[in-house]
Length: 385
Image (cartoon, rainbow, N blue to C red):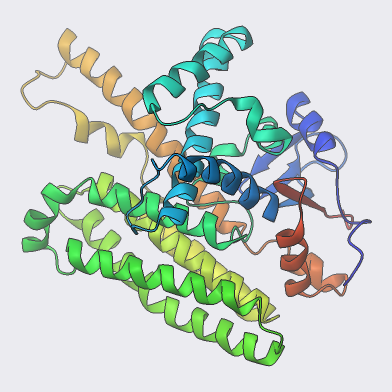
């Protein structure tokens, strides 16, 4: 396997640059924001096996207590799902607490999170320096969310946890799905659940192929995964598009459909990279990016705010001003998520050109990421710039 040592950049250097403003993060890419290299790529980010193991560690402690559940009904996957949710919610709580009340109140914020979860004794320190690195890079929410960083398929547990979270988001709208499906074809809970079940199976097949001693057999399996996953990516694209073009548009329900599209696209890119099919992986990544951009690229605060304004409030009145302000603040997180997802998907296959120029196969890069045990995210330096 190629020695990646000369291409790896220490996270501490990136953290320093992001803090002092000399670097900025866009999706899975960190660029120079100042100096003679302004605009050029500093490094590419990629999730690693260390993130998978960190979540599994928390998941094991949950499964021993018998409190983990998941939509799949599998206790092991349930533990990983709950663990990743805890990691994601903990980082969100910490970041929010830092912004609102300062570093001294972080511990209190995490303690309140533990009490509200009521499931396990959960201390931020127990997550290890890996998750702390994600927080310092400012990418914890993105890495643990559906969009992910880089190829973002580091293991069966993380991918299934993300799928479970997205499926749960859709199931939260169960009381509306029957009404919606009367007007919009294919937006039915039973069909959606079946599609998620199939994607879970494809993720398992992708993971099993890494254990094959016959590399030719593994590649056949990866190719099959990439080909079959295309159908489910298109289905979620179709559902999201119908929800967004309905009147009024159902943006809240369309959002997890787009997350499902994003995850399925990630699976296809990863499978093709494992086959060393750089051109095909790049094509699939570009198509997924175009799909997501076409769905949400034109949506902003101006589109979301009117959907939350009460009809009975008179425009121009004081009550209307207050309602407008509240609706704007409510819409900001959704808009931010859309922009982050668009950037993450757009940069998914970004390191392929650099790897190709250095004679490194995509499979080697995935193997390095999967075998990493210390850092939850690898930084591949673009030394060409």
